Length: 331
Image 1 (cartoon, rainbow, N blue to C red):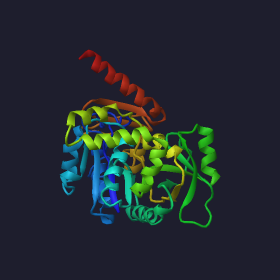
Image 2: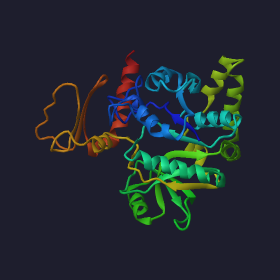
Image 3: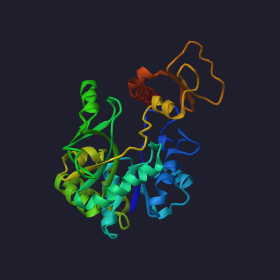
């Protein structure tokens, strides 16, 4: 199996520790290692053929975190373009290099049971030639409106299940119904495929996108400036929106391994444990006193100080974008 780690994102949901210069995947949020290093350690027993897709600005950070990965296997792109373009670029490269079974996965998630995670990936690899793509689905244990979901046809008699549709971030009522339906999973964003099969479906539903990525690859050596312009013309779109939601013959393999997308400070608190008896998360190199405060993230970082009740976490992204926008306007 060939592994592609996706390490190009620059999130805002974990401000002020996650910054444009050092985003979430390079931070030691749940262990002494960065999320990227933890992910590499988790998948290393499965394969010695690990590639990393990232943007040029993070290439050196990847090298520092993953010294065991050869420089030639770090696929540096000219600009961040979400997940579709990097996965398609790697799939095109891999198709022409023997068409190996490939697992593409985020580098900024956490998993409690690494062995169960590897078993799920191996199970997906075993059946990937029966589908265009296999996606790992996490059985939901709560109604979560910030996750994407998979609906499967049934759960009977198979190691994988036909995906009927993808549902992106449902409202609270639908999320509650998904938890009890028995036919819905959280979309873990982990895809296993044979590149030729995946690309055949990608060309059917997103031909222009695949063609532009292929032209970018062709120009890389002979015309770097032209290649950069092509890459920068690509839409910043996820593989889910660009391909998966329209693809046929997608199947799901269940993942029960204590998965978390580490997508909020509440998630970090749940993974690390509360900092005090009031359910707070305190992340600071200096003492913090918060008498009377409960269920709140208090985080001191290089960009500022965050005091955020967990019930208000949906407000953080907009607040960070407004703060950074003011900074840019004043420069």
